[in-house]
Image 1 (spheres, rainbow, N blue to C red):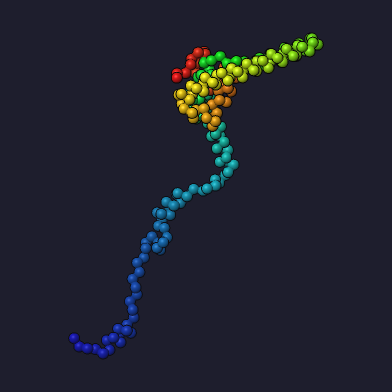
Image 2 (cartoon, helix red, strand yellow; image 1 turned 120 degrees about the vertical axis):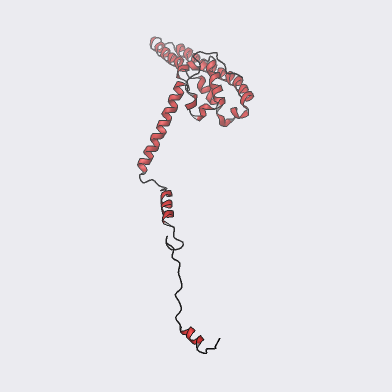
Length: 206
């Protein structure tokens, strides 16, 4: 090989070849591909609906439809479609127990109406003040009898609930006591959910 003193100088003066750049057919680096853009656009959901009034109206309609279905289920005694609170096992037991016994409180409204009517008639016919006193004694005596009857009922029912379902069934948050006494003072034909048996005496199994 012969030495050429002008070789380095020629190489230094030769123009540099342009660097080969690799182009991305889908776009510059860091930018999503067209397919990714479509996927992102399809996954985007607005946090706030475009028409709030229409959305709220539709939500109310769905809620009303569900409540109507649950109310109809309670009227028919359809346990599978009742509200969740009415499907709790201890509430079913409470309903069956209350419906099986004779409750003094279930005639509370008719008795109160009768007492008021009789009191008005007696007052208009007779001016004797003892008539009103007698009617008041009858009314408050009946209220006292209802309270005693509810207390005796709950005393037995509470023991059965604890033995069958544990302390959670009678805890304060369960509202089992209020559920039992409120059902016991309702007339049988007006109770919701509807009693499972037509007549009294069908006691729940222990």
